[in-house]
View 1 (cartoon, rainbow, N blue to C red):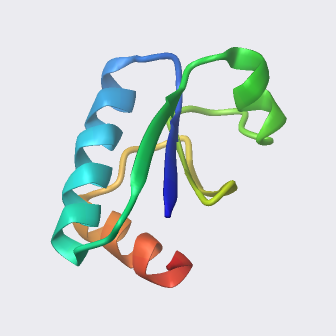
View 2 (cartoon, rainbow, N blue to C red):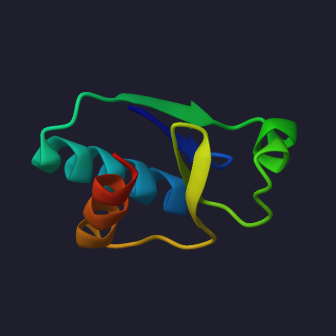
Length: 79
């Protein structure tokens, strides 16, 4: 599973990264985590507000920082 954090590296992006790693680890997923900081690439995903989370190329969350439990739900649905 490829997980991408879309954002410029702001504090909210860092919190989303930590929450995503925690959720994926708790679910026991085999995943690759990438950080996408290039604005053009972020816009190419259709994201207008960061941070955002993409799972296997599909944006599943944008514009806010969720709790770990919510990220787990998103990953479980996507996986």
